[in-house]
Length: 447
Image 1 (cartoon, helix red, strand yellow):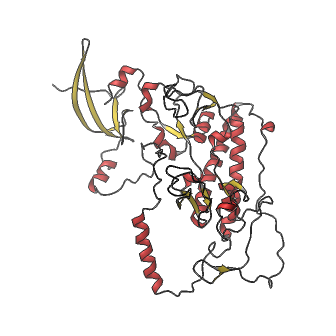
Image 2 (tube, helix red, strand yellow; image 1 turned 30 degrees about the horizontal axis):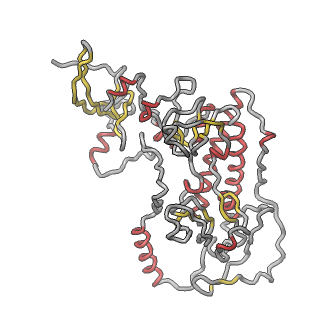
């Protein structure tokens, strides 16, 4: 006997890499297949558990082709959507585990062999492009100023948002939570966490808890000799993003750097001399392309008054966050940034420094030396993922429903709770389309 099912309150299953989550369905869902896999009898009612396969999106007409029909013709074609519907959380590497290379070693070796083959037919004395020849990339100088000002704007706005958006930090570990109360998950790995059974002890968070400070050595000459172990205390350390902006063209009086007006002259593989600049006219100090924004002291921070100011501040903060990350990624394509594969040490320059201050796992075997490799954007600006609160004014997060909650960067979560619009690229990890069970009994029925 056939039976019909109403989709008004139906819940389907969404499969990800590590979880099977329930998803809300409606009349616009395109049903592909329904499989019945178990039958349960609860009390006097007979419940049938089924798995329903569907495609999200508006219903197609008869003369229109659906996404499933278009992709089924070519099984080897990739998904055209740049942002997936659901994605796995950001992976946390163990202290004993080395970071993977951005490009696998096999691909690097293959590219090196191809580069050597091309160099056989080319002249040996080939002029080097900027910034390898010591000059600046002129079209990236305004970008460097934008990144520097976006970072200062982000810090100033976060100080103001902290007065209206509650952010909690654990007093024993580095975990933070954005919301009225801290989350109840037993994930603390700090000191004496076994005594507290992994429960966090929440305190008020600061800007440094949201934006992790990543410092690097300031180089007067980025093409000069590498920093030795004896020079590690005599050279100042500044934020790595600021050092990247300085090397890209930002002028700061407190941190002078060498600016060449002529390309360097290579006399060996790793040796070079500066070109003679005495015949050039005296350099006239020009005004910066953009004025530099100053950081506001904590005593001068004024909280927004009404709801409109909070929403405007959140939108401006989210825009500064995106501008800083996108601009930094463009700068890193031309100016090399290195990261240690074992610890979070960052060095902005062609090659890493020689300071033996790595304290990661088995650093005694390396005599404290760093294992330098190419850095990615998350090494320079860690996103700092936190649990997403679906409803700030609703009930708090429950420990038993941990698998149904999503995650987002701390800056993005603060701006969303303050009223800003959610960017598209963060929806995949926030699991906005995953239905959260109202009771624990409903959650146990999810396979």
